[in-house]
Each structure stands twice: as C-alpha cells, then as structure tokens.
Image (cartoon, rainbow, N blue to C red; front, side, top):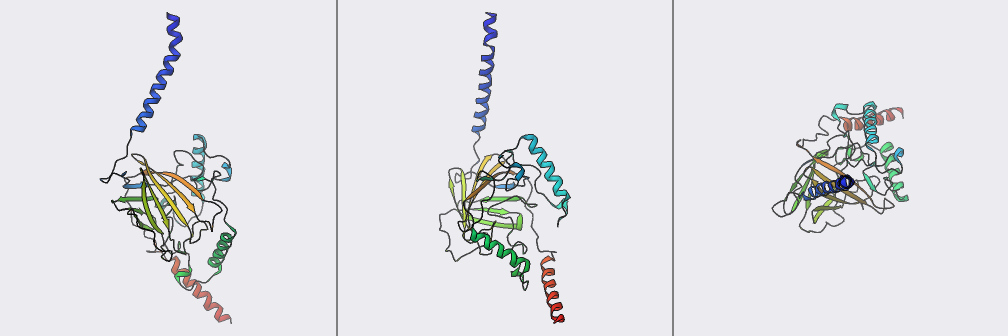
Length: 314
C-alpha cells in the first residue's frame, strides 16, 4: 500500500499542477471589459505608450523576433546610456522615451513583415524622398511654408499611426455613441473619429491628420484613415497613404494598439506594427511648440542675411 501511494504521488502532483493552470487560465479569461451605456468596451481614459522598443528591428537582432529577459535588460541599459551620451536639442530631463521594451520583449514594433523592417520603397517613392530632401536642404526659405511641417509644429508623431517618441507619449480617449476622440499630447491634436457610417470625404478634401472613420468589430475599435494632406509623408508615403488602427482592451490597465500602413505608390507591400499602452493617472498637458521657439524665425532671418550678402558681392 505504501509503495502504491508513493508511486501515485507524481500523478497527483501533475493533476494539481494542471488544476492550477486551468484555474489560472480561467481567471484570465473571466475578465470582461467595462462597457459604455451603448454596450461597447469603455476605452476612455489616459494612456501612456513610451517604449524602448524601436520601430524597426536593429541589425544586431536580425532573425530574432523576441528577446530573453537578460537580453531585454541589457538592451534597455545600453539604449538609456546611448540616449544620455548624444548631444540633443532638448535637455535629458525633458525627455521621456520610455525606458523599457514591451512586456512581450519584441525586438521591433513592426510585426509584419516578419523581419521587423519597413518594406523597401518603390522606385517612384525613392525619387520623391530624394527630391524632398534636396529641396529641404538646399531649397528656398522665403516663407514658413517652405519649411517641413514637423519644423512648423503642424504634424509630428501625433498619428495616425501613434508611435512612441522622445516625449509626450500620452493620449486620451473620449467616447460617445456616434464618435470617438483620440487626443494626443504630442502637438496637442484631437482626432474626431465618426462611428455613424458616414462615407469618407471626396479625394479633393485633405487634412493634416487625415479623415478618420471608425466601426466596432466585436470588442475592437477599428479606425480607417485616408485623405492625408499632400505635404504629409510617413516614412516616404504619398497622398494615397491609408492607415488602419485597432484598439482593444487587453486588461484593466492595458490597451492593445495595432496599425497597418498601406500605400501602393510608396511601399512594395503593406506593413503592420503593434504595442500595448498602459493606463496612467497623469494628465494631458498643453504641447507648446512655437511659443518661445525662435528656430523658424531664425531660419528665415538667416536666409534673408545670405541674400543680402550675395547682393552686396554682385
């Protein structure tokens, strides 16, 4: 009898382990998202998305989609040290890149293509990018419109797509039955996403942040954005840029964010990224970009000075 009890002990332990695992799994699946009066998941609140995970997979991790815990800690430390060593426009204490990679320890925000890299540009897109760079570097500065829109604080990282940056990695969601507002702290922009089924505006109507239309697919909010202004270019995109975003509550304090980029005139294929935002009690503060910023004024002033010098030499 004693031998039989001892021999069955491993079986009992395995059964207990399975029971614990099943209970844990059941506990995880029991969570249901809070809902608004109209029955959809309540995404409202403030969300933080700073991250040390780069958009594209670094060469050192080529062929490796995920890091071990040790590799992630080492990468976070090296990234933080590198950022502190670089001479930057802003003082380090003003920056908030995000010190940690995502909980899944991915080596890139890009999840498709599998290599974690932005697909190659089409020949036409490469030509556009080269011409744009030459125009910015050597072109005129007769008026503010000659300068890039990022330099003029019109569009910069506020989305779509939303991407972690050096600061202001916060956003707020407000819901009504007919619309969702995505309020980005970066540039202090608010996108009003219509949910009432209205069609997209005609192609001639263009917007800095595009025109967004949304709908619910079960518990996921899907936002499709088109009609970006001609001056807007994301990683080499043209005016045919389309962005699809997916917002899904993954837990009480986690918001899963996914995006897909499509522009057949710019990229050889679609590409997608994903990361998880965390709920924060921090407030959204005003993003004051040009207040006290003399950069643009000095660029125009320097251009006038160069013109005067050239005129004197003639």
